[in-house]
Image (cartoon, rainbow, N blue to C red; front, top):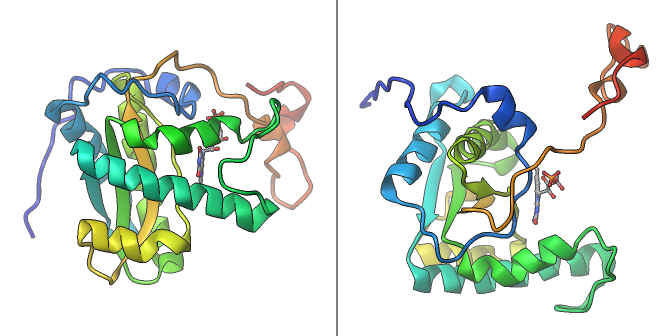
Length: 221
Ligand SMILES: Cc1cc2nc3c(=O)[nH]c(=O)nc-3n(C[C@H](O)[C@H](O)[C@H](O)COP(=O)(O)O)c2cc1C
């Protein structure tokens, strides 16, 4: 196997903490600003550095850049997004969502995926439940590297109803299972701080139920 040694790329100079703490889901992407080869390579290089089971490095990324192909994929994505909502809530495709629905932005992305500058699809061979653990560290590396160079992304999924067509559309071998779809683009708008539960509310020490000592002081971020 060819081993590739990389020095840390100078372009990834953003402090790790800044990248992690401002990695919002960016769904509003500038359709007119393409992702160039250098940026894409950097992002995929970062993905390739992730931990993975037995260092088998079985994850494969398919990057869709051709406008016609993105448009075709966008139609599948739209169908898959509404199929998930039909399963979960019985919603009809393209139905109007209430103004305060947490899904409004995701629904907008389902409409706008057709205009994403680039879309990364992550696959791995073997049963998805066994191999996902090796795919998602790479996906997170990819998204953090994108953030560090000012490119927005959001981790999304698809629905079984589109899987055969996805494989056909991009000639993906059937043994490769799909794990994640990550549109990439420069944000329309800004990155911002994430809002999450404080770690004191999600962490126990030594036994289930015992909060960490910092629970009394941590207001979260
Ligand atoms: C496993 C997974 C699946 C997700 N699927 C979708 C999706 O299908 N569509 C979407 O718009 N966002 C999706 N997201 C993004 C989450 O909604 C987002 O990370 C979360 O709401 C936090 O948003 P924030 O980063 O803006 O705070 C997914 C995230 C994860 C980790």
